[in-house]
Image (cartoon, rainbow, N blue to C red; front, side):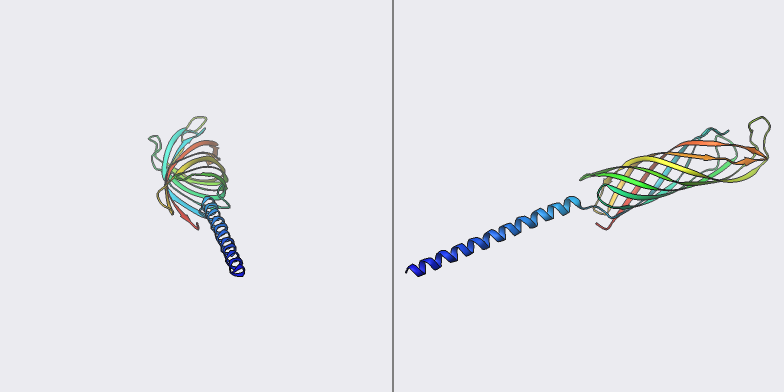
Length: 216
């Protein structure tokens, strides 16, 4: 009888150890799942959409706008830090009433910092790269008096961009970027009929895009 009772107690202790082990395993799994959920983020994000550039120059055309589009590809090292490449193209074929056709392409690269939330991400970035401008124009007044005949010109410049925006999550793989605002600094030095028309451009760029997320 004593042997049977001891055996029952031993069996009960074994069951209790197994229950505790199972409970510990469940708790560990739950904590791990929560940690993974908190650390989840897309490895890559591709954004594309509409962009408007407000040019503010020291050249003869002063301020004008151009419409176009831009796209960015971001690789995220973790939830907060990523590397982004940004490409854009913008055009205006009638600047301030002048017969001027202007097209600019930008290519920029740099770090992006993101604060990720359940419904909204807020981000900021700083990028360096270049810009290429090409255009044609009818007669224009030039510094020092006189005017030009019709001409075509292309020029390259280093470029710097700093800004940010926010994304609204629509699903696990798609977000809406309703507003991204950037300061874009460019300096072109086109030469027209021997006259250098130096133009420092302190531009603002507004973008609205769709964002596609990959590699969660």
